[in-house]
Figure: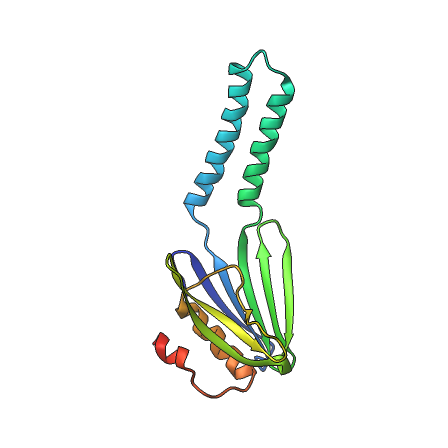
Amino acid sequence: MVNRRYGYLHECKWPLEAIDMHHVVVRKSNAKGFFVYLSALIVVANAASYLLLVKDKSITILLWGFLLSVLLVKVMFWNRVMKESVVVMPTFGVQLETHYASGRIIHRFIPIGKILKPVLLECVSPVTCYWSLSLLLHGEAELTLVLKELRPPVKMLIPIWKALCDASDIKEVSDSWKDAN
């Protein structure tokens, strides 16, 4: 399943399909590459303007300006999320993974006995509206988001929700599933 911003990939591992893996991947676009090159151009132009326009100032101003520009570009593009994965193991639990562009991967494991119910929620604010998938956990007051960083469309969330319902032995059809269709 492919969207303009996201791609959805479903994998089953092992002969009995015991491990169910769902990946939501951020699709690469030409606009992001353009902004990377534009940011690099701004850094070089900033350094050149310091060299050409400010001849009587110290070189430390140039170095600080260049350092701050590089830091800004790094902050803008380094902590981008590339992929979020949900690995459903019906006998053990659910592993949630977030993959960043820097290579860092954050893993969270939730035992299957702790999951009360997976819930599809529609989040509405004055500015935006999106769907999220959360887990209602035993002994915790707050919902746990399955996909913390990404906001894929509901068409990509429904197969993940169904797999979580099957793994936690919930057979009922929830109101959020009826509303989504």
